[in-house]
Length: 86
Image 1 (cartoon, rainbow, N blue to C red):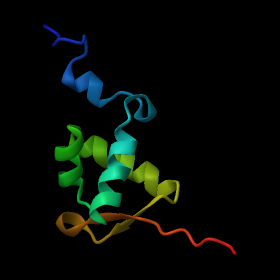
Image 2 (image 1 turned 30 degrees about the vertical axis):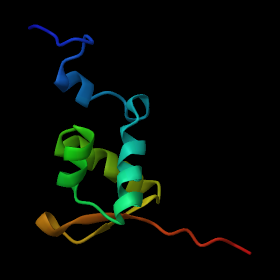
Image 3 (image 1 turned 180 degrees about the vertical axis):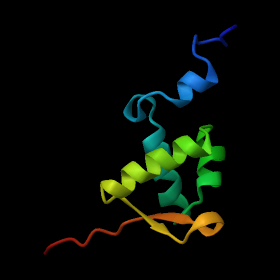
């Protein structure tokens, strides 16, 4: 197997730890900029597979950062609005 320049195959780069490659930040950035996003849009934006994007999104949902709206092909993700205490 010949590896591309940089030494990682696309498959191994896709499975890299979330925090090490900045993809979580890219996903959050995209959602902030656009208000919401589909996993397809995020996969195209980040270069990750949809499966990997959904794994990251599920982690963000578990951390109360992102909310999932809808099901199946009509699923969108948006940021959870945090109420600030005054």
